[in-house]
Amino acid sequence: MAGVLLTGGNGFLASHILDLLLAQGRSVVTTARNEEKADQIYKLHPDLSPNQLRVIVIQEFTSPGAFDKCFEWDTQFDVVIHTASPFRYAVTDIKRELLDPAITGTTLLLKTIQDKAPSVKKVIITSSFASILNSYKENSCPEHVYSEDNWNPLTMDDAYLNPLNGYRASKTFAERAAWEFMKTRRPTFSLVTMCPTLMFGPVVHPPPTLDKLNTSNQRVRNFIAGDYKVEIPDTGASFFLWIDVRDAALAHVKAMDASKCENKRFLLTAGYFSNKEICEVIREFCPEYEERLPEKNIESGGYPKRGLYGFDNSRASKELGLTYRTLTESITDTVVSLQKLQKQYQEL
Ligand code: NAP
Image (cartoon, rainbow, N blue to C red; front, side, top):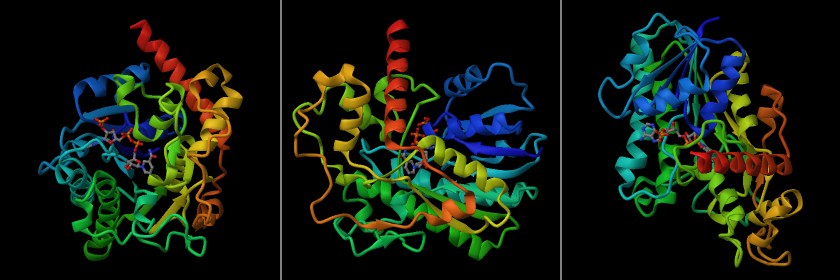
């Protein structure tokens, strides 16, 4: 079986993709940003030979030739999955910390594949619903149905207004650059972009500390830490749409072999969620946290009264056969996973 190059193998999503690829017996080369993170990936898969799993350290995706090392081994790749991109809001330099690694990282990787890896048939890039959502529209727009046909019209000027815009622009401009590359450079590989909504679910690659937990799971952690006891924050800064990380990972892996799945975007979502619903799942299924949760009849954190935008996720169901876990399963598994991490850190 030919090999797969997967960027950012220690990430929340990528570590699930890595597990699925290894379970299929694929030979995987993945990347991490330093030796310590590379060692952690090896530690999670102790019995594999370098032919089965190899981790390449790439500190900066923006350095010229950054991806060259990935193609210096015997592995013949037929697929590249590019997930690594900054997803955090605690940034001070939007260009350096969000835009450049996302946009330059994507275009440099595509150029390197075209120049050095003629065996690659398909490139799958993790974009985001951030590149579909219209940042200038209110969430309460029931007349609008989001699908793969939509693009976020956010401008580069507005990207610099705040980190939320910066992140959304990093995803939008990186994905646009990838499609532009396909049009102008006409490579022999095809492109698929995945546009997942907010991802929850178990963490398989432990972060170095709980403070470094991936961004999307942080709100679940905040509930069980008691941070939202007085008021549940508005869900609106995120998408009101979600997916379990295991289903999003499976979508990437299914897209590798689906023959008709070429040169397309996929909107990935299980449906709507609100912060209040997360709270109620935790209250019902993890009752040990009751004292840290807000009162049951609290008003904040729900859905807007005028209703929400619509969404069309039928392409992923039809073409990838994707089915979705429920919010209850996803959130309870996230809580169990966080409990395990907490225990692990206390034992250190
Ligand atoms: P994550 O756990 O933070 O993983 C991100 C990965 O990207 C990590 O390997 C990280 O390396 C790497 N990375 C971050 N900044 C980088 C930089 N400047 N240069 C090179 N690599 C960098 O996040 P995730 O949730 O798994 O996200 C994976 C992908 O899904 C991203 O493309 C994200 O935009 C997209 N996405 C996520 C969600 C969500 O809700 N989680 C929703 C839609 C789309 P370090 O560990 O060394 O920082």
